[in-house]
Length: 535
Image 1 (tube, helix red, strand yellow):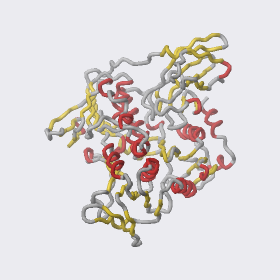
Image 2 (image 1 turned 30 degrees about the vertical axis):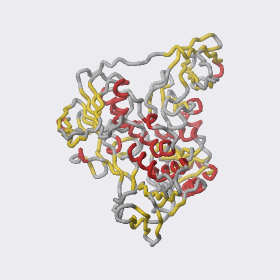
Image 3 (image 1 turned 135 degrees about the vertical axis):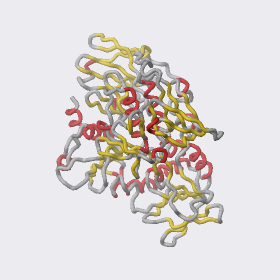
Image 4 (image 1 turned 60 degrees about the vertical axis):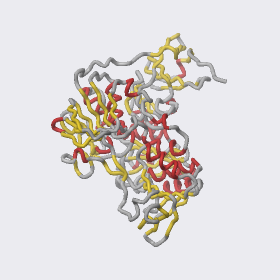
């Protein structure tokens, strides 16, 4: 029996402290979020538009409302999107001040849609249908761009949520249609010309021109006023004998995920690699429950070795082993065995042979920088903190080695790519109210067995660390430092189960006030400090 929709809610003003926020869950499963600044109150839909988290369980720092799950951030005054991974701002409701109470009318939504009247007569061409390309086009339309937008994608599908392939999709918990970014009619709804199955064979950067081959191999040129190159990355296939046999897979695209899903049924699966993809695929296939066995091979003694400490790694290994995963660590694959056509197993450097019906390589990716090869360094296209390569030309996402608050780096994570799109759209529109990468920090997460390990910032190594809590019970936060100095500030942190603390750390790091080793060892209250610095 469905629940009736609640449209009018009465809230006591005294429940909400000045400079704070509070969420109110309703019987119809909706959530109302109220923010307060002195005598001014605002009412919003309290579910994060990304994954439905209760924003009231997050953190408010100044005018920033930060989601506890994936750090999407919204303006407390009008719900404007400040940080992905959400791609939309918050729905704002009308409210009436009735003395001691507020009357919120969820049927009366405040329309904050902007008129697309800026840069009319111009043309923006986006090369790449991943997160960065999608977010650039999407944000341009959301913030007033009135020119023509053409998005070119080599895939045969509209932009989709790639990180969920190795999580919910492979686990069988999410259908394909739910992965589409912005919905099935996104391009049409936003007046975006979406050209699929298009191969860009060359970019002439100084002319802002792309040369394209369509699915019929016909070649044509497009010259743009603004050119955005976001070609992404491709999986690395190590130079291992037998890597080209049938039954050896990588995971990057929707088609890859569908193939692995079908091929793994009742099969003995070997996964090579203990990074994000390897660990997520192991968890997802285990949750799907359709394989005969799953074995993960890693070169190191720990998993996700560049990210987390040995203690946290051991806790993750135990979580996987408790779910039936076998690990072979400190091992190198020398050869993938087969009959000349179909894979049958692997041979390790120590001579050990492992049987396998299919093998999944989670051995990293390399940026697709060939189109800009004349201007890139060996590890990405060097761009500024607005993702600009030269006047009117932008390179973003996995290919961008961008200048930012934490230095110049190339980061292959979804939220960073979405940040790039948001910043690029603002740069095209000349909107200097939107912060560049100089005021943003990296954030990413991995989902395994319904548990989300989240990481904020960037550290050269996880070994200069302070660990608080218990990874074995999946309740910890770990801070990382670039050296062992007592006055060195933390440059990154990871957590399972301590989301508010990680949000607080992220806000302090963003503002240049990350805690020092000495402060953390002295019992530093990171949430109080984040509040204090934001008021």
